[in-house]
Image (cartoon, rainbow, N blue to C red; front, side, top):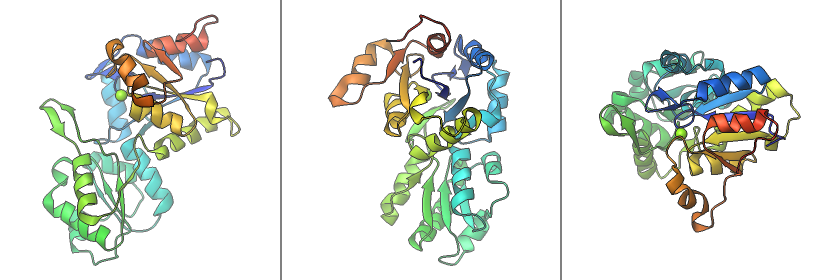
Length: 283
Ligand SMILES: [Mg+2]
């Protein structure tokens, strides 16, 4: 741990759980700030702009600067700004999440439905709620058939909301892939793209030459956080404050010859202890 200079933090299961802050996580962020250890928060949450999400966190006592957040929506917007600058793109997302694409050539759903083949450069599927309508998905289907890139904020099949288990936009992505025969490019976790953006941000704070190995991802998902980060050369630290409990640890980390996390910690607070207190260590 002594060589770790910066952190990438998952939000759900690391900073917050079921909408409430995880005890010790806010203090852990304050200690990182006090020690000058930079971090980015990476989450697949994509139905709102980062400023809205940060305000929601802060209303519950978890303070994160929106400029230090990368969501599946902001990651997708950064990607299209780079790859499709000045070209028409059709983004299916909430109005608030669409603000991440400000300054880009967004086409309205009406224009997308009326567009001629080849007119739209890329289709982005996000957590659009009722915007994931037959009409909009059918327009996306025709655009992809005509050559538009198929991009997905993530491919999560379902998630928990106040309604209980709720269908997520990954189901629409899988449907479009099935119908078009085109595999979507995913821009949220576990895609390397989201980690690339987080590493670039941390290198602005730490200097260009900081090796990827000096940055650790801290998450509660052994696959989408830990192994996905390890695949791009980051260290992967699994914490037990979210979806992985102590009982599941063996199955989550050792099963079927899968790569083990570089470290396992009870919580983010323990990770920050190991980074900032001489003598503190992780398993
Ligand atoms: Mg998580």
